[in-house]
Length: 136
Image (cartoon, helix red, strand yellow):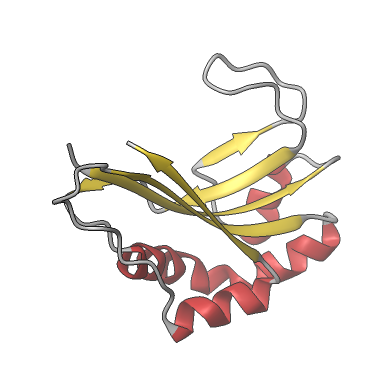
């Protein structure tokens, strides 16, 4: 069984409409959740959120460097509007890495790290980094 990885950037808060963030930033989200909105695939959201994902990757070797670079390349044209949106909508930001790691001892472990351009993006938008790992 291969490992699975996903990298995404999200903005979340108590009282905002994710569609307003898309309009303000000029970039469509790949996932939005509204506080208290019921969905069959997730528990009841405690916050509203706006997120852009690089998509899930299933492979023998998950390269977080590469995945995060691809995401930042997509978002860097909007970096200043994202930073402004954080203030305008009173949001918190996260650069999220989620890994489901193959437990086979012969399988390669993920390459986890961030290049300077990714670190600069995270700094400019004022995001925290969160890395979640799960056994696959």
